[in-house]
Length: 216
Image (cartoon, rainbow, N blue to C red; front, side, top):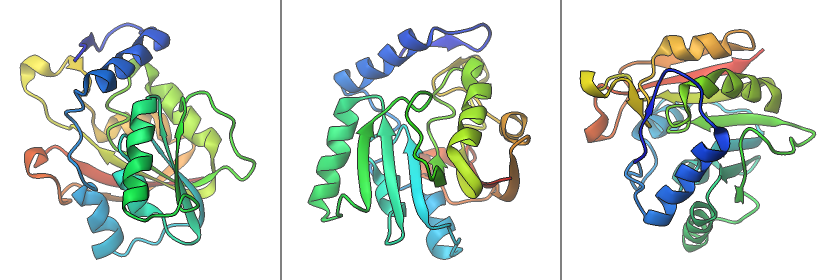
């Protein structure tokens, strides 16, 4: 996987090409093959109530989380730069018998797409914030503020909060912290839930914190 230093800027076009190459090469090592345990715990065990309307999962990959969140009254859009990812997600959805009017998948640049008039009422961000270059994080926060309606919920699974010292300045995934999210979200969002002891994949114990932010 291509490695970048945290300092400095990055060319967005060149950075996007890296993700096309990852999918083309089949090196999607972040893919755990299922819904994140922390998200399942939040929705199923803790019975978190989501707003109805439309939701989005940027960097959706094979779409597990978008399909999990989709339900009558909440249409989920899985967005990914890679046509291969979108095709894989659509194929998996069809094999599971989930109708397209509940979960749809689109080739989309999160930072540049036409925002629906109703905006989004739900968003889920997991391995997206840590995948973008740190120089893009302020744009990430502004973009979520722009696409989400007042009262909307942004579920952010904060990962990875720990990396070996020799890897901390490299990514993706880039090291993140709760403070990194506060810096780019606090102007437009309120933190309404955080759980540093959330359930995780076995290989990510101690590396994840689930949080929910409400659009002001």
